[in-house]
Amino acid sequence: MTVASILKNKGREIFTVTADEPVTTAIAVLCAKRIGAVVVLDDKGSIAGIFSERDVIHAMNTHGKAVFDKRVGDLMTRNVVTCTPAEPIAGIMGMMTAQRFRHVPVVEEGRMIGVISIGDVVKSRIAEAQAEVDALRQYIAL
Image (tube, rainbow, N blue to C red):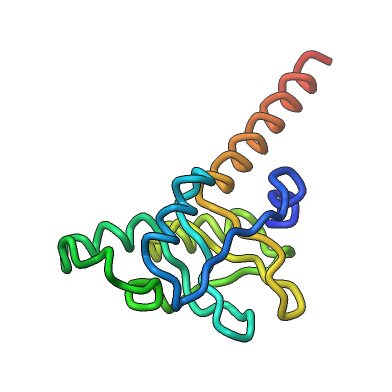
């Protein structure tokens, strides 16, 4: 299975903010949409970073209450790893686990077409494993 299959099932809705927006705006989006991260866009609409719950926690530890006076660009994760729809899910899962991040923008022909999370990847792998179990049971029953 590939990343495209995850996007087919979950959809391609993307939530974004800009680097110059207040941190409180990004936190409001995370809460309202019940998501763990938003993609941060630069003034040209390209990916500038990711702002996640983890970024908020680290910033609160470093800046205390002053975190709420910051801009998203001050706190976001700048080194964003992306993937393509053709990449195998197993490879993405390994990369996310090894590099300890939970959200990956999906880019096709230079354009962002979705975002997948580790939860999406795990859900897909479980469905794939269940399908294999069902197929083996059916085969054995013959």
